[in-house]
Image 1 (cartoon, rainbow, N blue to C red):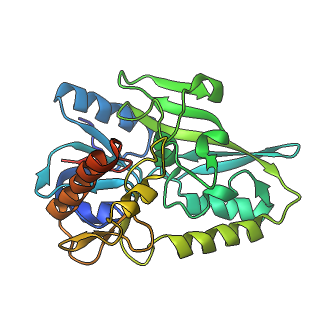
Image 2: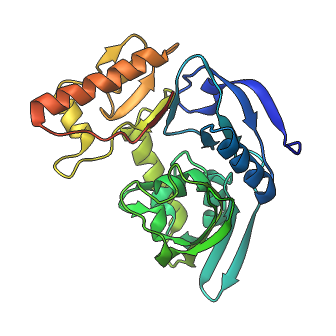
Length: 290
């Protein structure tokens, strides 16, 4: 295989926001679609799991050494901004952070992204899981997605060709989102002020003072997951050094020195309890990688 920048025995706890996990036997840092295709091909030939990693805000890694094709988006941070009348098109590689996009949004007072402000994500990871907040999903502002599929074909998909739904996209466990184009509009509103309010609300309602993996479970159709967990007495419930937050019952937090086995037991306990009490099967929003 042609050389691609990589590191061996990488601490996985530093590659996810809850700071729990063992070691990755190797992590690759591609900087082009050609290198991504090589890695997809190797995963196929060696029958290994291909796993893209951005900020890792909804990811939890198990202990021990994991021998997957881990592909970091750290070297994929190029972006450009184009304008057409009142519309701004931001073309961003997978590793561009929401924080970077927020800087562009504030600079030009752009409308459409403000509800997503504060989500700890890269544009690639957010697109894969169709991240959302305050009634907006990233699919609402996507213009097109540049995607390398499992057969190593580079494809450009327009928004109306992509089947997004609540926290779902066709890109999950399927190829690699290389680049995304989002469309925002010049606004007459005070966008920085709206962003400030959303960030204040996020800080007030979410346990951002601890390492956290964000929302643990997707909201069922019947009730919000946080409501069910709180009603079941799981708000603040703790196993070892991992707990469901006192601020928001659907947020897992690492109190300090949390272990994977504690987190997994906590998640499975919640799933069982909600199933028994309310006959509702919780679906995980976090991805547990073992």
